[in-house]
Length: 173
Image (cartoon, rainbow, N blue to C red; front, top):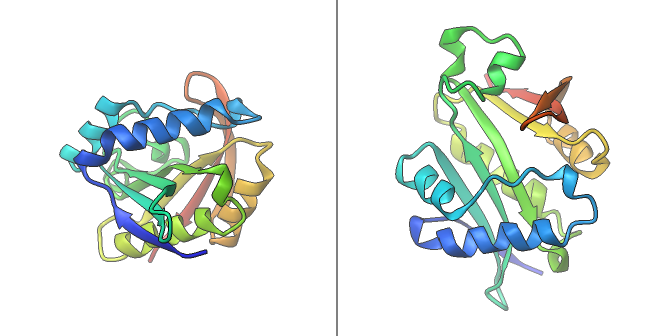
């Protein structure tokens, strides 16, 4: 199976919101995923350039197979840089490798890693040096993927209104 990875636009907001909601509703372990991405959030993220969304399209069917959201939190209180002790100056160099969702029909094709790698490549020539993400402690698949991509487990913390999450960091030079 082949996939094309494209950057999403504001025009994709409805589709992306429906995609995320559908994935979440059909998950066996809903607590592993903390969806905050409604249509207004997606549109705001894209229109204010506080994030980028990549989507994977299966080339034969044209179906959305997965998506990945990167958020630039700045000095927002949600910035994971606070959790790992970054300085005020370093906080503006944080990118949250935030949300990945893959349609069940396309799991097993390495889309999570492909989408994250695409995002990392795009961030390569930017100021973002601290790539941070959270993973549910029991989600061994995502934890393994992040470690294979060079992310290091830093600590476990309560995030998203009290949900336990592992914080991972990849520091770019």
